[in-house]
Every structure is written in C-alpha cells, then in structure tokens.
Image 1: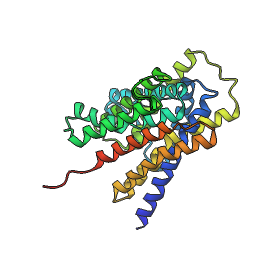
Image 2: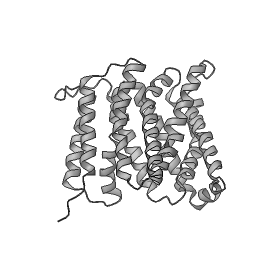
Image 3: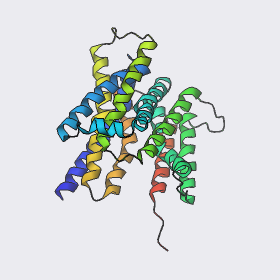
Image 4: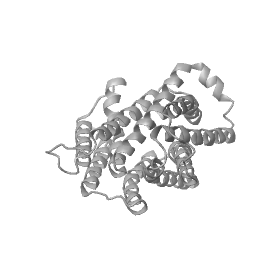
Length: 295
C-alpha cells in the first residue's frame, strides 16, 4: 500500500507538471527563439539529470553505456531532444498553444502505426478505428471545426506539430532496444544534443543579452519540468506500482488541465473545436487500450 500511494503521488506530480509546460512554452517563446529555447532548456535538463544520476549512483555508467553503442546514442540524442524539441517549439511559435498541444498529444496514435511498420506489430481493427478517431480530432482542432473547408491558420505549424509526433514515436521505438538505465540513457541524449543545439542557436545569430530574468526562469522551468525531473517522477511511479494501467491513465487528465492553465494564466482563447477535437483524440487513445476479450 505504501508503494502504491507513493506511485500515485509521483504519477500525479508528473501529470500536473506536464500540464503546465504548454503555458511555459508560450511564456518562454516570447523572449527566446525555438533554437535558443532548445539549447537553454537542454542545458538546464542536463544539469538536473546529472544531479539525479549522481544521487542514484549511476554517473559511473555514462562512459561505458555510450562506448558500448555510440552511434545508437548519437542518433537518439539527435532525435530527442535536439530535433524533436526544435520542431515542437517552432510549432508552438506558429500556432496557439491550445492547438499545438492537443495535436502533439496524438503521438501515441502515431506510435501504433509506426510500431506496425518497424516492430511488425499487428494492428487490430480497434487500432484502425482509434487512429481514424484521433486524426479526425487533429483535423477538427487544426481547422477550428470547419472540417470540410480544410483551411488552417498555419499549415506549417500543423505540419510541424504532426512531424513532432513522428519523431517522438520513433524515439520510443528506438528505445525498445535500449537496455541501459533509463535515466542514464536520457542524459546521454542530452549530452549529445547540447553542442548541436547551441550550434544552431548561435548560427541563427539571435541575441542572448536582451533576455530578461523572467525569460531565463521560464526556460529553466521548461528544462526541469518538461525534459528532466518530470521524466524521473513518471519513471519512479511506474517502478513502484503494481497497477501500471491505473498510473498510465492519469496522463489523460494532462491536456485538459493544460487547456485550463492556458486560458487562465496567459488568457489564450480556447476554441470549442479544440476541446471537441481533444476529446476525440483521448477517446481514440482509450479505445487503443481496450484489450481483446478472451475467446
């Protein structure tokens, strides 16, 4: 019971923190370019993960883990955090957060299709239905409910948000072959990505000196609670529980809490079609989780 209670607390903490990041993204993008944001947030996350590994006594595993399969970790790091967050932050820059966040949330549906291609997993009829429902929800959100017109406020923003789901799903498919400590594996990804992220940020020539203390605090928050510490909390919750489904289902509350925060903290208008589309995506995800009944 003690472990289950702690698992629930860790899971709730992770979900609540993840619910704040869409708001934090928009506050940070007011002062940072997407490339600057990836670089600064990745640095904050790297420092946090180093502290976690030091506390867990796993820092000594870094070198051996990397040298055991260096190109594998280079590819992982270039996908996430480098490319994934660069594309995701640009999508948030082009779209209202209330559109970008639910579209990105459809990554789990993308994962089903990619797993069928790359892991040879069979797609059940209910998976096809879930995918159709989820992507229809994306269209509802992107068109603000005018589905037949198929007109988007920012076609590039919608395309980038969908591309981010491919990268995130692809990252987790590659991770199925990762036998290293999960936190060590994530830290290696950040260490690989840091020079690329700062390289792009300095190449674009954006100013750093004009960023306010509020901006630095916001990007530090993103690094800690979108990329770093929250992952450790979620992982801890899954390790402690014996009811993984109950903990995993907590994540369904995250996008709805996120929309409320966007409305109340930064005053973003939540279009009714956004809520309707998000409900369709969530229903699709729930349908995916329904197990086959035994014959």
